[in-house]
Length: 174
Image (cartoon, rainbow, N blue to C red):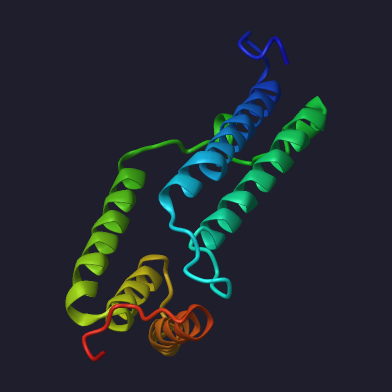
């Protein structure tokens, strides 16, 4: 591990990338768990309330566990196994080109528009438009599946959030 900065074959380079990604993600997760979340969330309001830090802590804790798994896997992988860590490295890697940047721009625009219209029309209609757009963008063409998923998923998520967390998502009818 002391020689991570030296020129190495492609499989070892891939292994080095996974090692550094695991270290970086673990460090960021630990930083969030130890400082960001505790310093920026309020305590529970009563003994029966869940702490507002619960869900962020669970999500970041899961990220920490997965980054450690990736790190251990990369450290234990031999040179032959390192080639199987990711199939899009080396000559097969597409990298960033105008198509990738265009797709990123489209996703960013759709996300920002969904966020902005959510204030005016509510969560369910905004996410219906977002999901339908996303499904069309990724190639879904069956109108029944697009319609059912785009309508039922936001309604189901809204009901789940309301009944599990007793939190109402933005809506113009409430």
